[in-house]
Image 1 (cartoon, rainbow, N blue to C red):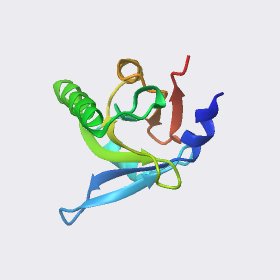
Image 2 (tube, rainbow, N blue to C red):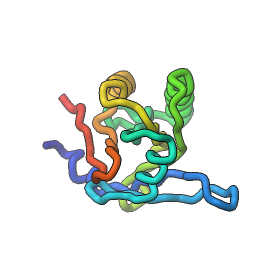
Image 3 (cartoon, helix red, strand yellow):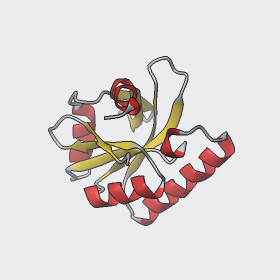
Image 4 (tube, helix red, strand yellow):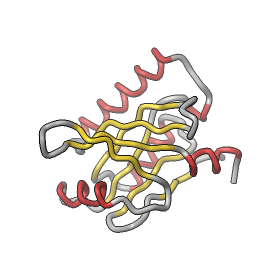
Length: 141
């Protein structure tokens, strides 16, 4: 597909989920490998879908941290307005040289996820469906 396919496929993804003791647990996940903890989370919310998305570095081009923070705050505000549950996380290359803050949005439908990806000029998002493996949804033209 593109130079990004292998990078995104092999990236390290993690999300902070609430733990039993009141502390957050780091839950890592990979593309095309089912994650029972994220399935459990979707089930807990009574939802069948989720999307892992960032607003950082549009089109895969590095921008300054201040602008990335502003974009992520804007994305979080939109998700809050939609009243969807969400969790903080990050994705990055396997060497840790490129890390982007991200959100796992539970219960978002595919059309809304696609709209956010286009709005924030993202190359791809990670798409989850209950009891299925997470996949990449591409937006590169």
